[in-house]
Length: 333
Image (cartoon, rainbow, N blue to C red; front, side, top):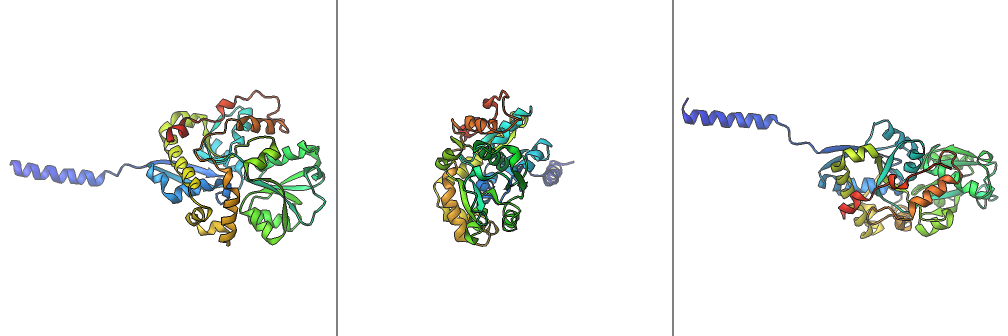
């Protein structure tokens, strides 16, 4: 074989090999969101919309379950690698001998409101919950945790009221309109939809850190990206890319208006009313962190709240240092 023939054959073989070799795939992570359309979890979809996942070289599939407890169960079953949900699940899980940690802290307030049906003006505070049916997203969800705490704190025992899982959005609204629930805990944009129709009024507002401290006695870190401790330890590169992407989004949110944030979100998230969606973001924007870092005083408040009503948590030795990490978000700065 002449040198020319050999060289041509080598080039042809290299071309065939290159064509047959797939491009290097991006790291793939699946995250379950406890209601992707809820504004408290807005950073999840916004990060995708802004293209920050791809920018960090990670492929993220966002799935949605209406209640945080369902998202948690998907993670425990190994069906997803992470959850966008409330940090309090990490504390509750440790009490059950399971270890999960917040790796990016989205918020420092729940963004939740206890709404009361305008058909029931007799409910003036959680002290009036006795004998009532109260709406929550799901049993074992953070809305259920907070509802039980507010009742017990105001002298109503756990057996003296009922919590009914009614989800959020249209199902929550229907339950309120049909008097299946007399009050209930929900988030934006469901809050604004109920206020607009006059079906409900605000009883307890936890959309800002200041109002949250009044209701719960301290800073209550809520929406977060949490993952099993084992996954975090064994997939540090992937977790760092996620942290980088989410911190970029939180910084972006802090320097852009509610209108600009709204325009980046899918229109079907607006529930048919852009102005209402914009106002809801503006009213609740203070709940979000700008850097993804866990507030120092937050974990202790969460533990105090859960210990206030939960037989599962009360009296247990909880190592709060194992319920969150700032390792990744600090590197992301």
